[in-house]
Length: 133
Image 1 (cartoon, rainbow, N blue to C red):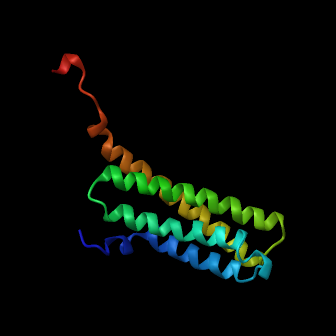
Image 2: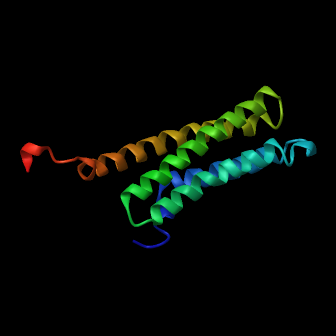
Image 3: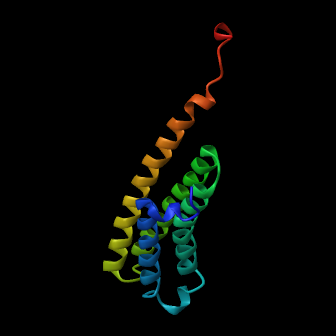
């Protein structure tokens, strides 16, 4: 497996697009939010494709599943923060809607990827019953 294999993953590509959308969104925030909500949004957004890439580069399916689960957590965190920015009426509403849509799609794709990785792990996780020994 090549180190850049993750770049071929649609979920990673969409995660990168989401991160760019979040940077565009936070660019419309007032200055006083630069180190508050803006910074948290950016960290959560960057965490998603970063965890996908790191997990994909790992040598085990178990590690990959763990990093995909972390990316899922970051997607939920990001969605919460974008919704908070809407409640506070901070940032451009059009870019915010785009980011929320991408966040939903990334979350769904990550969920499917995580389920596929867990299914792949199931044979490894089964403990042989005493009767089968």
